[in-house]
Image (cartoon, rainbow, N blue to C red; front, side):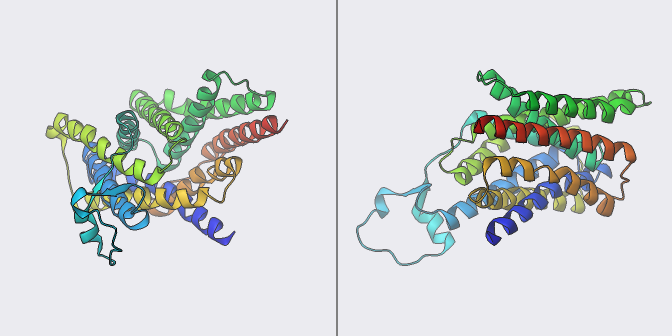
Length: 313
């Protein structure tokens, strides 16, 4: 029980920290969005492959023909393990593309969006995309689920309405659309990963595939590249720690969480991100933001609980 509680708290803090780190890096132009995306994915892939070698050396990798033997092997270092084994390729290119779309849209959106708004829109889009997937699969929604969706939508409209009338309305709207696309991409990625027997290994290879797409993005943004020590550091922390290690911790937490509980606890991520933006990015938490958060997160909560009750009956 305590293990599940601790890992859940750590994972949710890591997810919220991704928004804070992106805003710290991109708000002050410490790094450009394309470079932030590439470095985040690269550092995430490195740490995930290290975790795969350490945590699950037997399942995701197979011994090479030259090393196959019936004799027991002595314990080896991580370096020797990497030399003596070859990886069995996991994941898929479609999942890699969805991961890239999430990371890239996430980065470009946070150039203009504040931490809390970005996290709130991202989380809402993820949940709505999963609900849409359920509808497309032929599942019918309970009345409480529809009520929750309508409430969340009203909260979203209330949140973005001032941006539609602002002097920089086009930039704000474009950033909101990018974050919505990031949420949809992450939702699709999550749905595709539900059937994964080795989620950590699949994630590592999907990060590797996403790097290739991020490399193309870098090529198309060569004239806009901007790097600083702080910007690179934020990107590495976001990729290696709050993404790579954060995802690994989340997989551990999921073993002790029911599906509904896992969905509900994620409601805290935008709230934690908002306080992170307040403390670390010196952003303000407005009454409008808090009201919109209550409507959106409350609507999603009603939808999740309604889905759970409908399935029970």
